[in-house]
Image (cartoon, rainbow, N blue to C red; front, side, top):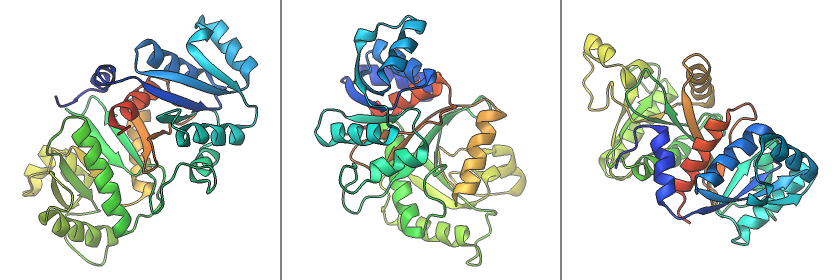
Length: 302
């Protein structure tokens, strides 16, 4: 079944085996709310690290049953992060989630040479699944948060992760748009040159079952009227399931525009480590964090 709404993602996660989630420094209400909802929905079992007294008070104030969580005292966010990585490395958890720890410190924990959760030669990238009322289906995009200016080789890896996510959400042959300033092919613009190279590799089956096209402007990726007006010929034009942005500036501006102005709902995770790492902003809603837990639970191979 192809997932077209984020709520359906939660339903799909319920059908799979319950995952063990460990959360880094749960000292904020939105994270606790999302984890509580995921536990109640039967998606996960949860271990919470942080200041135990703070977590217990939040549970009491929210009328949550504290006994549904395994709570571990750790007042230092970085030590909490490394402890959570230990849980992953020891097979005691299958998912890891960011709480009140800063994104930089969270990433440092994941990448830690002694206690982190990276395999040799692996690469982290951010996958975001977006639902908003102005588009008829989910859009899977990258990279809005981790890799500032991906090289051609990094874009290859990002594409593999984006397409794999689409497959796991039931889309057997996703339509993939490689975004650049224009559909005109030119080697003078790196995003255009990279798109041409990626399309050639796609023709040889390099990315698995998918339809990949570009370069194209973002309007041509998602707007059928723009495709018609410009006479753009593409199997992807106006109907993209997956969008690869050329750099973090363009991707992050898009992400914040649709979430803040269009009130889009999202689920997001970092992939490339041993397990999916849920990376929501400290300001994200409990619903966004719940969708992110469901996304990680559905896509994990463990």
